[in-house]
Amino acid sequence: QVQLVESGGGLVQAGDSLRLTCVASRLTFETYSMAWFRRAPGRKREFVAAITLMTDSDSWYGDSKKGRFTISTNNAKNTAYLQINNLQRDDSAVYYCAAGRILSILEENYEHWGQGTQVTVSS
Image (tube, helix red, strand yellow):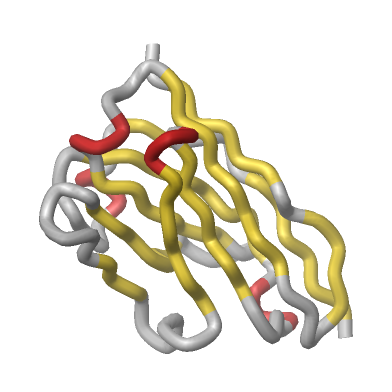
């Protein structure tokens, strides 16, 4: 079955940068849209960014995410990335990678999910 495995999270200080990685297996990478969501304690899961390779590598970002967050892929490695710069305490959350057939900000449009990677930002 399809498997998505995230890595790259950890404990960082405010102002640091991180690159999260999502490796996909058993799926035709180029036919999917890849997305990142996050869930902070006590909050609903939130859309962060998504990218599709099916139409000129279009990418979308959640509110207030463009600028510090950058989503990208390496098709040869079936891997999606989320670069986060100038991390803030509010960025502390579990970050999830997801794969779906369409480019969407809605989690219900993504049928495959990873287990998540924890990002904790200290001040």
